[in-house]
Image 1 (cartoon, rainbow, N blue to C red):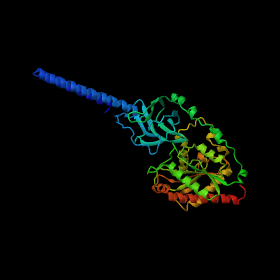
Image 2 (cartoon, rainbow, N blue to C red):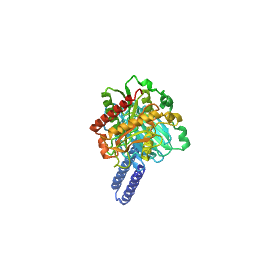
Image 3 (tube, helix red, strand yellow):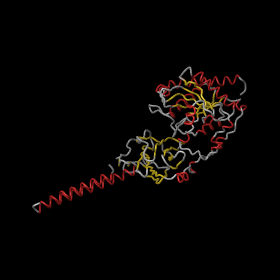
Image 4 (cartoon, rainbow, N blue to C red):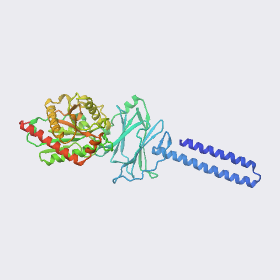
Length: 466
């Protein structure tokens, strides 16, 4: 029952009491008796008025915290739990469905300032909130993330000092109100957004990255790293770049236990890098060494800036069939080897959209990541390394059939860097999930892949200068 209905019920009860008391007054036989009843009536009316004022105040409190939904007000206490680590943090997210508007509230612990920006993106409809210098350590979060015009949301680290929330909207929305509530009544500082429906033309006219959110260097400049000829690579140690997929605001897939792909693959990438470095034969670089988001095209650019001899992107898969398990390795092809490979490539290539990037302004040349320049030699070397991985990995862990597949992954499109994408296993399979979170299994597979790298470069060295 809503607050207004509760108030109405209380008032009607008060009028019922008045009617009864008046009837009693009519039958009173003495002036003293009538005075007592009048005093009782005055006290009851005063208490009813106090209750009504309290109900109105509770409704206002609920509106200010975003706790009011279609079913009425949901009493909500301030976030009392302290963040897991020191310093200010976003500790609570709340969504309120107000019918014509949907309210989104983020609470920041303590008296930390609210330095943020908000913008919308289309295809699909998204609302993006970037918060400076305040990480997310949630102690309170809605169980149901689908409320009002919001169909879901995700959050995480986006840049070194920027944390991002991406709201998925079911229809075109506008930010009708955007304000900050200062700390009060046990609540920390709150960032409040009110979302209201709008028409598609108005949404598209206002959507897009604000100037303050645009990267310092255009994507075209990032992608246009000069192609390095093989002759430049002779007098140096081989360079291997390991790419832990997803990260930050883009969590990837998840297992039944709740473990997230971005965490699993980062742990493996670090162990793999440690194993390769221990040989003393390679310069090893990670595209990310923490829980941060890296755009797909920037991952490619990192490999090319380091003049990598080999680029290995590490992921964990998910599928609707929980009995499917095993490692697989992908190399670049614009024609996927099967429907599953095509579906996986589509999902992985959506990473930038998931993280709230605006891709509409990029040129077709950048969007394709120099597809037309992808050299046949590079693809051949990628396939050779993939076959080497299959030879060694199949002796240590379960692999798919066939284990070597082809798909159009964005991260594999550097024209001059042999590149593979390894799916370590399926987080949707209990046995694979258990392996993926096991330090022992990670250490074994890191050694196995390190042997594959040794074999690959050993074969190339035996063939002569390359």
